[in-house]
Amino acid sequence: MSDFLSRFRHEFRLAACTFFVLVLALGRPVVLNAQQSGTAIVFLAEPQVGEDFWSGLYQSLREDLEAGAGEVPDGVALDRNPDLLRRDDLVRGIQAADVIEVKLLGRCDVLPQAERPWLRASASPLGWVKQAAGEIQPFIFIDCQRIAQVLRPATLGLDQEQRKQAMTQAIVHVLIHEWIHVATQSSLHSAHGIERASLSVRELIASPPQARLRAANN
Image (cartoon, rainbow, N blue to C red):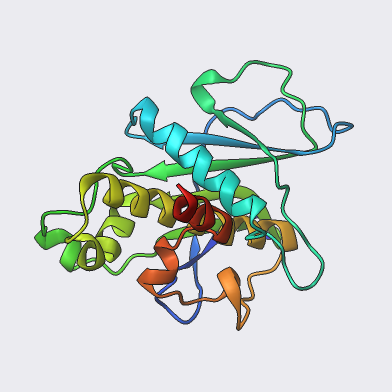
């Protein structure tokens, strides 16, 4: 069938994407006004997370975008000031030229701490997008359980707040990486920056330069 749905998955610690058949929807479509400019990112978390998670996620995402994490060498640049919304808060009439839906899977507010046997055996990707009829769709999926597994060795010596920040920053980097695939309509990876197919854990949890400068001055 020419209109079958497929998704390409890739993990930052793997060298390439793997393609899978996918039939999955995030829910009812978002109503938008195509004449408006800007981007709206709509989040859905399963299971639900606390309010403090959202405030930390939004702050980290905005800091990364302001620091230029969404600037691609070929001239494509992600919106530095997107509207950040949760699906539960949506009302009809949202106005944005582009809408990206982000589905967070697993407990994204659970910090990587205790070792779990089923996590040790996992080799699934951190995030993926889906492709239909040759186009990369504006749906991003992020596996927080898998992120916790990858981060655990590097975060065991950190305090609770530091582990929370590491988890949030990793989610943001996965989101931006996948968003670039949507914006460029390309499944290819770059040899540099956040577009690389493989990032170290240190790179995955690194704060943007502006955030590090503010922290140093405080």
